[in-house]
Image (cartoon, rainbow, N blue to C red):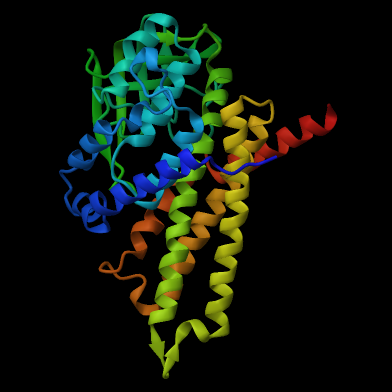
Length: 371
């Protein structure tokens, strides 16, 4: 079985990398980091919309490019390499996939064309603080028409126009779509380790909303949504980890100490080798996840969990060792290492922490072995 991308998909990756290398340099990322009033890079976001990336996995009948999930994986990796300060994941992963997964024909016709056209920005609101959200501990409620409660933290919640919310309904939970311009919505910016991806606390007070899918199907739909999103996040993490290895390797060849490159030292060689091995393990698992995602395979829960665990470990390790390879310069504000370290820590807790995904992987393997 060939898990590699096609020539067309590799061409898309190359073109995306060329564009982002010019439009999303670390200097551009720092503009968002250094300005507390700027939540995202609006100029870059406009260009991303123009190129149709938001509609890559949206069917043509709904205004998208009709490409597929493999193309989304390609774009996710390149966005991860660029540590792009835009709400791409919240919109193209969460909002798009939730509507595709659980929306009815009317909801798809109303939302998907607007996503493809860049008219809406999405957000995913499940968390209410520490712990895994479920019907047993949710305090945000949905009565079939309106939503009440507080969600924190919500990635891109301060700039989003629409949100996917997991809320308690009756004795179960439902997945709900809410227009954040509606009545009863208040937002407060929340500080995180990575200010280039803004977060917020969102409070709903009798806010009009509509259910996605059936009543009480929220937890099931949420799990399916997170399996899809996890693969895309894994590719984003893989992209960042790859850049960290490249940065460390290049610095090790150029930095001289005691008359020779530091890359000649055994300790540095071991760091680079360990980074490479973890990255390759992550890439293998990401490709497995991409196959399962694009084909709708029954192995998706297992593949998504494996990709997420491997990519989380690879990115965190690579970003940490990149700083160490750069030595006393590595942790300074002027050097770009911390930009990737920040993003690696942030992505580790998006869509669930590595601990959550390890538990999911164990359950998936147990179910597979018991079958």
